[in-house]
Amino acid sequence: MNKIEMARDGRQLADQLEKLAPTCHPKSDEHAGLLREAGILRAKAKDAEYHCGVIPNLKTSVLMQYCGPLFLSHLPGIVKQVRAFHAAYDERPPIKSAGDSRLSFRTT
Image (cartoon, rainbow, N blue to C red; front, side, top):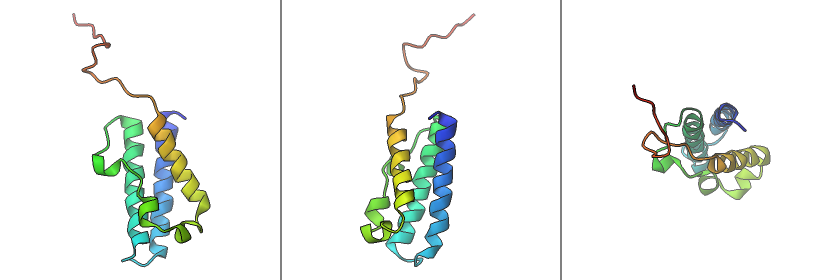
């Protein structure tokens, strides 16, 4: 999966979670968890495409933490897709930074 596809998939998953959130009570853990996970997916999608980094509190999936197993059992497809996205994001090759000594820049 290239970075454009990964970013697109992350944004689509975030959209799906945001559409599911209103089906839960606004003060419920499930509502908060779905919206927080959508934010995490958007941050990782943006990083995958633009290499801008992800702040530490948006690096770890919270879907399982906020949404109980009974609730998630009604959403097996999207849970599987979210897990696959996080796995693909975590397995992507590291990006060389401008400070990497292995990079050479021609100056004239």
